[in-house]
Image (cartoon, rainbow, N blue to C red; front, side, top):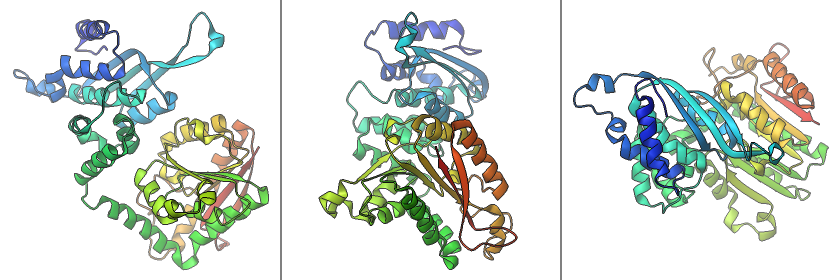
Length: 405
C-alpha cells in the first residue's frame, strides 16, 4: 500500500509481515493492518492529533486481492465510501491466457479521507471481498466488525451483504450484528422499514395498483409460457406467492439484498409448513443485483417489479451488465413508477417520490430511452405496456418493459 504520507516504509513493513506468514490470506492481511497500524486505525496521534483528524489525498495499491464477485462487487463496496476504484483482473497464468481469469485483482483506491477511515474500510472489506475467513468466526468477530465498521457500515447500501460475508455466512451472528448495528440508527428499524412500504401501498391502494401490477406481470409470463422464474428484489414474496398458484410453474427463485425481507417472505408464505412438492419449487437467497451471481442463470424469465428505482443511478450500469450481459435470460420484465403520473396522487406533495427509498423515478420518455439502449446493447427486443388507469395527459401510474431475446 502506498499513500502520500506512508510511502515505501509502510508498504515494506506490511509486505514483510505477510511474507513471513505464507499461510496469510485476506483475513491475515486485515490482522496485519490492525497490528502494524493500530494507533493510526484508532485515529489517535500523541503529538499531532489535528493531522490524524484531517482528510488526506490517499492512494492505495494492492497487487493481488481476491474478489469473489468480480469487479462489480469492488465498485459496489468502495464507491459508496467515496473511493475512485481501478481494478484489473489477474489471469490465472500470464503465459497461458487461454486458461482465463482468476479471482484475484490488482486494485487501486483513491480518496480524500482520514487515514483511520481508510484503514477501517480495508480491515472490514478485504475479507468481505474474499468471502471466506481462514479461522474460526465467533462472537468476537461481531465485536470487531462493529468496532471497526460501525460508524460507516450503518449507512452503507451493501451493509447486509458486507455483514453476512464478514461473518462467514453464520446466520445467528449476522442477525446479532445487524440488530446491534441498526439499533444505533433506529431501535424500531424493522417497523420503520415496514411503515415505509405501507406508505407507498396506501398511496396506490385507491386504484389497486399493486394488484394490477402483479396481474400484468403474471399475464406476460403466461403469454411466454415461462416455467422457471427469477424474481429480482423479491421483497416479502408477493409475486412468488402468486406464481405458486399456477400449477404449470416448475421453479421460482427469489432474490433480495435484505435478509429481513427474505425472512418475512418465508414467514408470509409459511414455507416451512408448505407441502413438500410445492416447497421444492421455491428457492430464496440473498444477493446484490449489481454484481455477478451464477445463481441468476437458468431461468425462462427474470422479473424486477418496482426494483430499479431503488438502485443508485451510478449502479444501473452494473445492474444492466449482471442481468443482460452475464445472466442473459430469454426474457426480462421490468416495472417502475411513471413519475409524470405522480401529480394525480392528491396526497403526494409536488415533486416528491412515492417511496422515501427511491433513488429516482423516470418519466415515460426516460424509461423508454434507457430500455431501448439496454435492448440494443445486448441483443433484445423490447415493448412497453401501461399498468393501471391510463390518463390521456400523463399516461399510466406504472410502466412496464418486456424484453425478449
